Image (cartoon, rainbow, N blue to C red; front, side, top):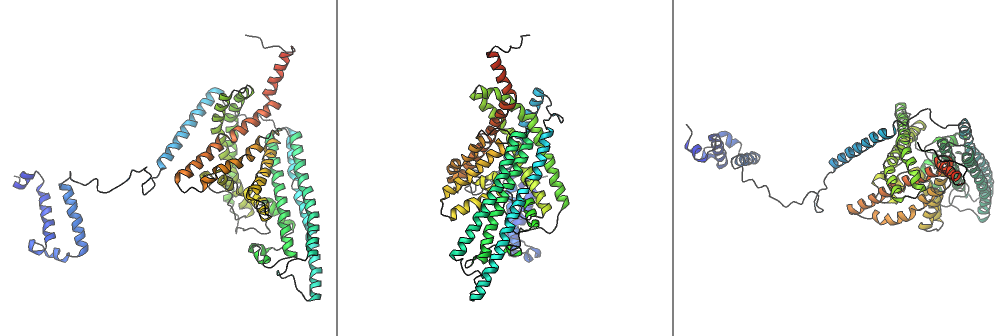
Length: 541
């Protein structure tokens, strides 16, 4: 039979028994405490007792818990103290992208079938032979630069020996880095530099002009032409860096002013000028994954061949992936856009741009990873090149300026070191120096894209040069401290990058290629023949 208490309250007697024990422990010995209770009459057991009491009370009075006990903002409100995690939304976006692209894959195969054909290429034998020939001839201009610098170093040694003899005779040692060159020494140095600069300019210009001429007129396949033109531009940039760096090192070797020797990077002490003018030093610079010449680079202790094998495997897999996407998905979209461009159907052109943007973005991201993460790291590992900061977190760029400074650091560091900084030190304004950098970069972009496709139409040049107003437009967003400002800048970057940048350039150059060699030119010729009465329309079936 139940107790009266249980009958009155409707609760389990065990709850009352437990509650009575808690109350007795809380009121001390006069309420029936046990010796153990006396022993546990410290501060910590009492806290434990209070927690236990609250637990019992909560189990007894389940409907009186204070759910709203403090002031709290909503999770997505601006006044929240902690930013919420959007990891779930990121996962959702990945799922949506995968599902959406899977639908496009199925639709593409249903519409066009499998377009991949290993034997269906247009690699002419003459293209391969010329490409290989240029691959071995282009680095010769680096060795010509070495010969120029070698004789300049010989002259510098002789001049320093003569100067040292004169100073010893006059008992005025000036080669300790405490005196500036005299007027005569400065004039002589400038005269030598003018000759060296002229020889270097003829050398690098000849290399780039001859390569571009051969690629434009004699190499038909754009892939072989692009690889050859990239090689020529890289050697051109490296040769210029080799000349400029040795010019400054030679001046510091001959006529150091007060404090200049100490201001040189400490790393250079391992191989001071002119000991760096050797064939081995130049060959390392040729293969090193950098465009900026230094006599000494930070090096790793050993080569991890397993690391090299993994990176090479990534390059191969991503190259196949890019080829598959280009042949199966990008080419049909580009071909279907030709008649729209020819008829200037603006809505259809915009629709094609949006459709092409996804494919081009995936191809570009795969190419970026293959080049900057896989290939350059493999090359750095083989050459034991330790500084592998080839890019930063460009995908978080809050402006176009941040993107251009972070996505391709070898090129950014090159132009900053050899174009921007020298102009600024000579008194040019920031705007003028930036204009020079982007103008030179725009010219190289046009050569890199227009020469292999045999169409110097200026799209790559304008696409690069017009980045300057976009950079100025988004520059205030870099200084924003609020998340909304950075978010807006990042959105502007991605929209300009994925829609109005690469897809439009790819569309224009593909159309120009087809107009010159492909279906557009044939279509135009047929229409002309029909209009002139020399052709016939296909019969209706």
